[in-house]
Length: 115
Image 1 (cartoon, rainbow, N blue to C red):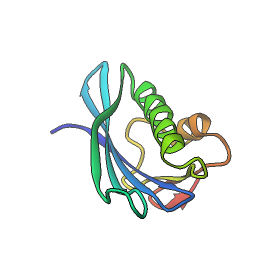
Image 2 (cartoon, rainbow, N blue to C red):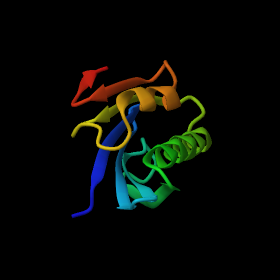
Image 3 (cartoon, helix red, strand yellow):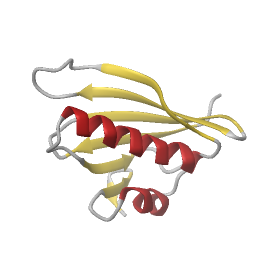
Image 4 (cartoon, one colour):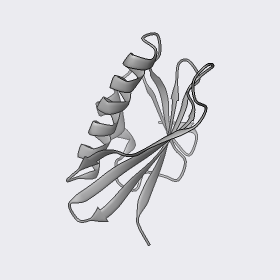
């Protein structure tokens, strides 16, 4: 069975992204992204697989955040990542590591609880 860390990302303008951070091998991690809601007038559902890769889970997460912020900037300059929830704990990238990558303005949660 493929080990994964599930990550739910919500934006200020109510866009939803679901991510699977997957461990394919000891030095091979991928973030696969499913877009649940891009907003009015845009395709409701889309998938970008894989969005980010890295030799470590943290590298893949950093690439995910960079890529997602870039896509949001092109989509809607008024939008930004607001909440990152880890609904099934933090298998690979801890909440403090996520907070460091995301910055203090983003709320990081584990199982729906702010950390």
